[in-house]
Amino acid sequence: QQPVQSPQAVILREGEDAVINCSSSKALYSVHWYRQKHGEAPVFLMILLKGGEQKGHEKISASFNEKKQQSSLYLTASQLSYSGTYFCGTSVSGTYKYIFGTGTRLKVLA
Amino acid sequence: DAMVIQNPRYQVTQFGKPVTLSCSQTLNHNVMYWYQQKSSQAPKLLFHYYDKDFNNEADTPDNFQSRRPNTSFCFLDIRSPGLGDAAMYLCATSRGLANTDTQYFGPGTRLTVL
Image 1 (cartoon, each protein chain N blue to C red):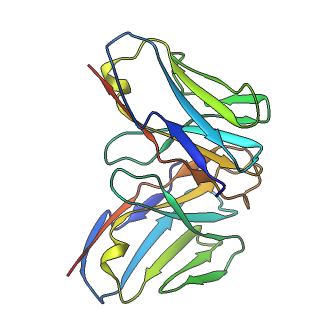
Image 2: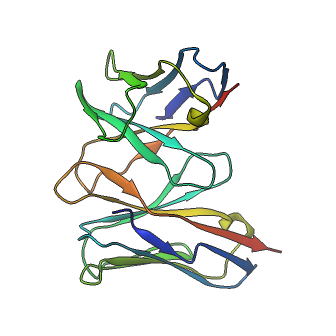
């Protein structure tokens, strides 16, 4: 039931781009994206509510394909500060249970 | 600034010795959550309160209890900590339970069990 993220880990050089995918076996009604730095709490990045919705946040954007039950997070021109673990999160349909994806560890090198 | 505060940030306890973790919020949110996060894993929801209504996840061990005496405070009680309970415990709040409601996390309490 837990959304599966891919890749599990990625290493980038500063300025490179990355895509992180979040796929669910269940219908998704909304997707949240968080970034968590080591030893810190997850920080909310953005929420996507409708199928096909795309949102942007500086050089970080995301899309949501309701039919494919997946969301993708796009990081462009990555900066050192982008390093951390990225989680997608969603509510389990028909319940109030909130569940995080498996996580993607991203490291940006100078 | 409105925020979610957790105390203590680091807690060391002995095997079997009860421990209480604290969370407070100034956001005046209706919902408070407790998550357990083990190393290299995603946060796992233990339970949540909507106002005074308590909702326990089916797979949360009985060893874990929670109290919410008022809107601002929520406590996590671990009655008899085992070595497997060593983890980061995250408190979060949200305005409601709709899928549009964002969760705001506290800094976490790292629990060590000796």
